[in-house]
Length: 176
Image (cartoon, rainbow, N blue to C red; front, top):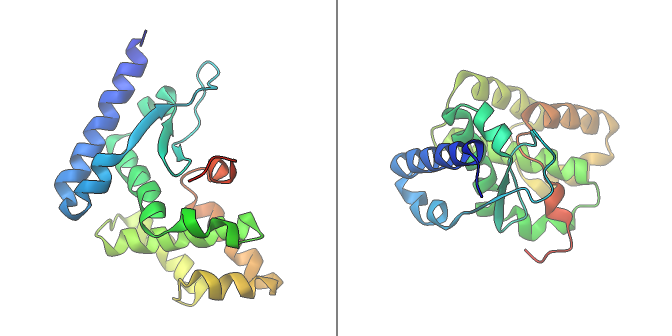
């Protein structure tokens, strides 16, 4: 049986998704197809952020209740954009997961700003990340240059700054 915390979390998620559907009508279909699941292995007051395995959006009720609706909207769009940009299907092409994650998150940040998510914090992160990547968000091109230790270090620092979701479930044995 669901407790109040879980019900409040579901309502907050529904509010965020509804807001996104109203704002991004062109994304109505993918936003409507999202399947939400509470993490199955939650400990009491587990605050893990949102994540996906490519099929389900997983959440912790404690985390969701601590987030503002605006923050949830951004995190939902971030995860959704990973799918729309094809990141789940090309994830295995990358040997270094930390580099892969940083590059994919950079591409998502760039795309979300292009879609109109232009909060000051996002613009600042994008400006810094664009400088690091010379304005080119091509995954293959910059993954190949990761042999450059200075570039790699700079990329990973920026990757930590723009990280929103956990990509851990991407590498599970489940077929995406």
